[in-house]
Length: 207
Image (tube, rainbow, N blue to C red; front, side, top):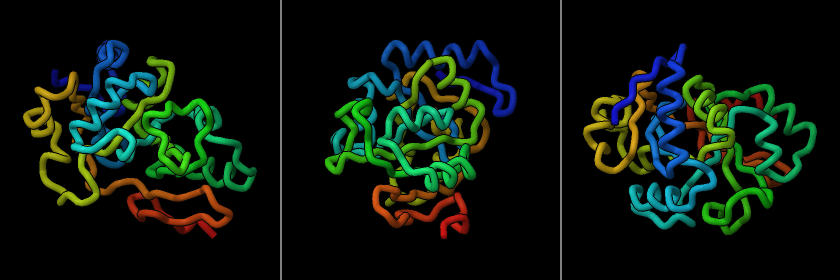
């Protein structure tokens, strides 16, 4: 299904349709504040495996992130962080960043890395925020493309995304044109922050 949702004023009934699909174990494609992404419920292992197969990789090797819609969610799925890092994250979130943090015991083992870390995203996108709000828990997500791909037109055009993926996912959300620049990835598991990938999010706030 191709589901049109207004990016600034998401229609409640359409948000509900997306959430119902997720609750039934479905996977969806949706816009974020960076690129379009694949996602499912954090607690549905079968859906996580489906996404990994779509990406052509094993679940334990997939670069999954947890998408949240509040800072409090971060504390649920990551081990405690110091006040300096919390203030730094608070200053840029919601926004186009992925923070690599030490995973808490709440992170399902299927997509926790061997290093016991997890990428957490709090995107600045009303569609995603309202889906998570109604669902009641975070999404598991991965970018529609891989870092090695060229940025093809289908990545940013939801109509073309639907043509490519309609037989493989439950819903493609048309929330307007997607971006072509991925999130900035920051490793926060060591004493010094490390930029893993410089993307849409500026890094001048890191000192």
